[in-house]
Image (cartoon, rainbow, N blue to C red):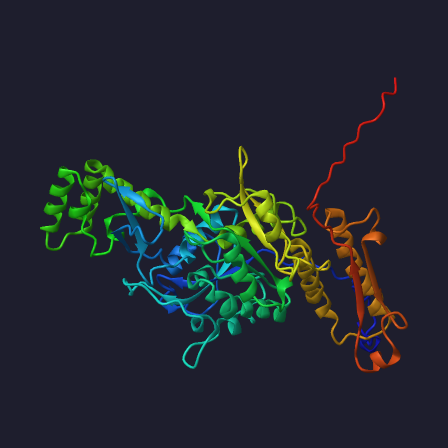
Length: 501
């Protein structure tokens, strides 16, 4: 209360703040999923191209609908073209998904929540609810064109998302690397608050791992690599349940009467095809009857489900980031953790094969491998960013912890913009930052046996600022932190010694 207001005799109360402002740590694992959904509306209003926060899978389904009903064709295998086959009545056949039917966002969201996911954002860039034949995946749906908005323009206005995941992009194969992934890395660097999780293209039946990795490393470029991490291989999951795959997943050209060798099954097919307009109940009965009458039909359904269950790992990894951040902290490396709802990786990478993936001596583009371990399960066995040769930004937890510290301090110091740039303010700001970093040190985020060994905060005239800086309105703060780093290589040395007694 200003003294000029004391004009009437009496007792006046004046309250003063005794403690400095505090720094609150920002959320660290809030992914934004970008891709195609069945619908995009809430309360009758479109959510297309609008970042929308969801807190559960049920809320996602309510606003964005269910997965796409992919269609498959079944054809006799061509001996001249090696491919993954399955047997029908002793003959090899090949299952192929129809063009425009490859969409991964819905099942990636399911995988995200199965692995510890929580709050996330969804950006729908297109809908397939009215497109039963499929939808074209295009980079312009994400980054805009003359007729479409750039979704990252809207994302720049959202502070909360900290991870960027685009599982649908990998349906483009290696074309996604240069056209989409590089621009995601640029966005993360521009905001300085986000981290990208990337997939590699699905390894073909005749491809080698080295070929897939080389194409990724050539396509991803060299810019902003410390703002993203790549994971390989794809995962054979159990997300899609048996009841979700029926004869409706078969292309209209597939003739079940010719495929199924069992006579009872042929009669069931003939009876069903005679119905002009079958309702949902009739379709369900038809499906169940074929399951009961035809082991071949069951095998076909299992083959279709296996194809749908082979998913890129980014959705599961985003869930693991959330789980590790919530249980241990962002400073814990998101590695040596098991992946839920996963039967096995699609490719079994050995210890020796991982060497060239984990350490890229040429450009440092590390790729984190997901590996099966007998008796343990499927584990994430790598924790490096794409900037794997940098001692500053080699590890994911170091990059993400510093993002958390930077953004937390940025929000806290905003209260001091236009405050007097003098010693009183400097002491308050330094005390606030010291308290925050001390709490992080106690939680194990910073390395050092004592606080002064774990962090250092400098601010003041003659320390970080000159008189000209103050005249220019600058308050310069220097913060140094020793972030804990993972023990990636544990070496135990054994040596025999002479008998002592």
